[in-house]
Amino acid sequence: MPAQDYDSQLLESVSVRRRRIRDALLFGGQRGRRTVDERVGKVVAGVVIAAVLCAGCVGWSFVSHRLVGKLGGTVPTTAPAGGARSVGEVPGRVRGVGVGAGGSQGTTPVWLG
Image (cartoon, rainbow, N blue to C red; front, side, top):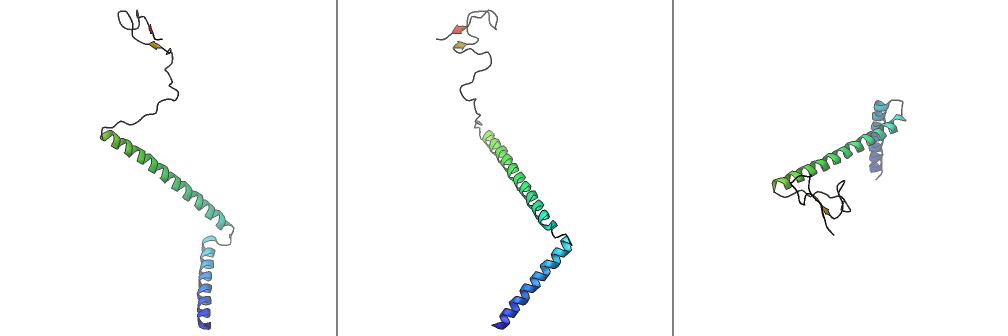
């Protein structure tokens, strides 16, 4: 058993030494810089992941709308909430119906109600 303990201690010390040499080579005497570099890397990775997710959503939306258009279906559109009317529209009035020569001149509005 003592031989296995010695071997495991030797392997662990070699791995620690390699890690310290690698860190010294990468960061030199500026050990505090390592945490900043790790944080910047994580931020950049997060931004890249977010951009990929957004691009995937946009691509999925584009492809699904194209497929719906090719299959002959209609793309559902959202209507304004509350039954919004156009500007100048009077409730109960039907436009363009009435007595006259056509067009907007000379027509009499028809009131519902």
